[in-house]
Image (cartoon, helix red, strand yellow):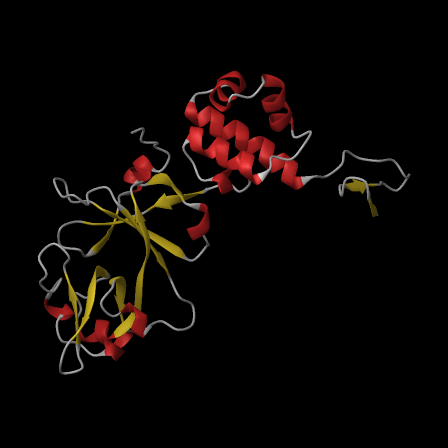
Length: 240
């Protein structure tokens, strides 16, 4: 059984004998954990943050202990000096396993198990149906970048994908016809004869022979890139 404490909006849990447990305040617990995590990631302690913000250490300590909420304008100040998005102070980023990559052929391949790594995805782009694919083309200006795609559950193709950088998979019928069909990344181009092509962004040529002048029904999924970023620089701050 639980009753709401109207003085501070915390939920007080009562056991069968009417004894109170510790108040449950998920926002405070998360904020406390995330602020500490952000400081640890930066290699700072509370005193250093207080100095950067020109605040007294008591204030920062209260934030860390969550004896009061961190207001949005304060979160913006903290984010600016730490080098993150203000929302990260309230909402964690998500770690996902980076399993897939493309080389210069732009055909999607799977990293060996020992080469798969954990990367962080920006908070606003995460959900369980995203796919992260890394560009592995040493010497290229895009080497190391990660592209995030939504994998649709219902409508597998949208006209919004045309002309965009897409993740594409083949239909069952196409795979049956072309045994070497693979998942690819590239620019989905519409042709004058109402067929489509998928172009390699580096060469502007079809990714492979089967990616030239095919029909829309030959695609299972064509989903445009949602975001691209380099996870190595996700938390970097550039000082000018």
